[in-house]
Amino acid sequence: MTNKFYEWFKNHTSFITLGVFIILFGLYLSPVIKEAKYKNSCIRLSSKGALTKFNEDNIREKLLIETGLDIKDLAKIEGYRNCI
Image (cartoon, rainbow, N blue to C red):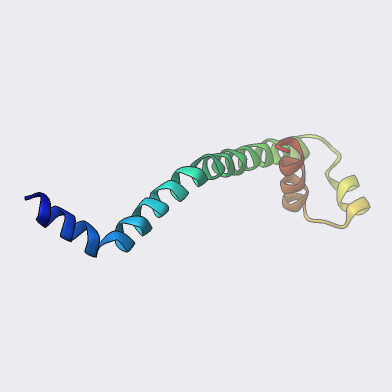
């Protein structure tokens, strides 16, 4: 039994090493992926809030004239600024 396992392990060491490397790399990237998801969610929600604020206030035309950007683009910029 031990000899069969040893032979199998000996023949598949590169496959096992690659699998362990992929698992460890995935664990290393997991916090980065979670942070990116959190930041995207924050930007999306902040953009919606900024869009509502820009539409409710009477500064819409003033912002459009000063920046030359669409109101949705300004809301995205504000959302990104809030989540940094």
